[in-house]
Image 1 (cartoon, rainbow, N blue to C red):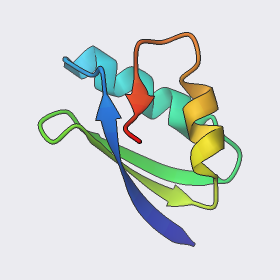
Image 2 (cartoon, helix red, strand yellow):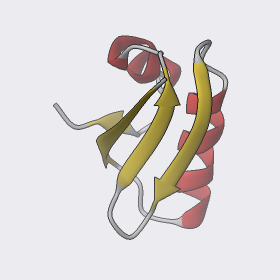
Image 3 (cartoon, rainbow, N blue to C red):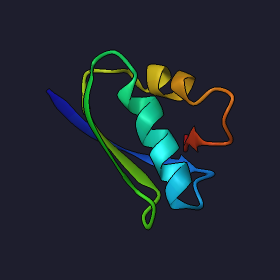
Image 4 (cartoon, rainbow, N blue to C red):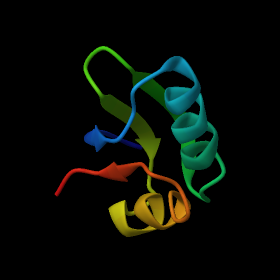
Length: 66
């Protein structure tokens, strides 16, 4: 199982961080997600692709930094 960190754009509050966590958690292959509001980083465990994670944020103001 892989563990990767992604820098996030657009998160400004705990509600933002929770939304990203919920969206990422719903992606098939994701087993665990932690979002650090302070560092603006999501730590994702599992085998989901970055494209699948980014697609889960569609319609929000949040994104994975390229």
